[in-house]
Length: 494
Image (cartoon, rainbow, N blue to C red; front, side, top):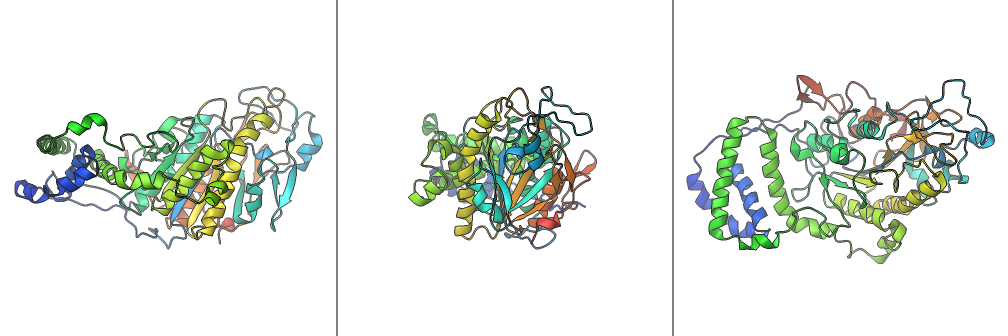
């Protein structure tokens, strides 16, 4: 069953209404000239001056929830791009430590993706139990270790691919191939915006570049284009492309603006007449209107200079190693605070270095990337709690797959889709618990193997959505985020 709302706007001549609306032009020009003009086109459309259009989108109240009362109002997903090693972070294996340096012989065929399997290798970091829950965390995450009683660990995550691209798609969209909507887009489609001044779904990539698959991992796929993730580069001179009026556009005159509106009117009429039911027109108009509003709202949200020195230090903005990821986490919190429903923060760009793809030297490579995220992640959790946002915000920490228990070369680890770790914290989550487990080497998930489908179903459930009922008809098939799989992981919920 698809939850849609058909909103048919009748055709009208509109000429008499144009004069009554032109008074808004001066106001919109203050929002940014060219963008304001385009935004006015949307206002004209809202008043039936454009051809009839049809939008198909479920609606929900501001607290979320299509099918049952939501526990979560907003989500921030922290994605470790490249395959974070579970063996060196959260999956403590005494037997692996004991047998380190010996041959790996699990009694089954052993293969590696990009190398020949080497000998077993223990983590170069020490392990210690933390919190009242006694969760094991390696010394690579000293700050996150202080938060374990707030975290629910999925210790037996598994995936269907050992390759970055497909595994990345799967963890974000539920499918191994491109063209499917990511979780943020599904949430945006299902629940809509919490505010009119900012997007429902925002993506904060690593300052060094986009992740594997580029923008594909936060694509809207076949959903309305308006649910696509809005990319904001917080450390760039221009965080959002075309946010401000370029110098060359200052020559725009009132007469030119009027003619531009007339041209937009004609183009929209012609396009819609030729492509009835095409959501891209509505999405384009909505995007232009949102762009005009963001010229007022976005700069203030992205400006962290007004935060207290204590808050800036909490996120690690006072240290070079943690400044970039810390800024993204802080901006992520500010976006949630101002009404963005789903924020995705990425650690690590595409490539063989500066991310979690640690093939050469696990100690050096993982140590560096982990240090850049450890304090900001813990700071985010503590800040959300201090502000009372932890009660309706969900935090997700995840990656596309894990690493092997044996060596690649001398000190690296190869890809391992057999098992990895994710965790959740915040609203509706039972802190200090773990679900599932891997084998004694952390090679394969053995108890309660957990796929992306189960994680996605659980997130949607917390947002008040039954994952089996939120569907979109595409190509003759009722598509959903969890495909034909998935169950809610009740064991980690309050």
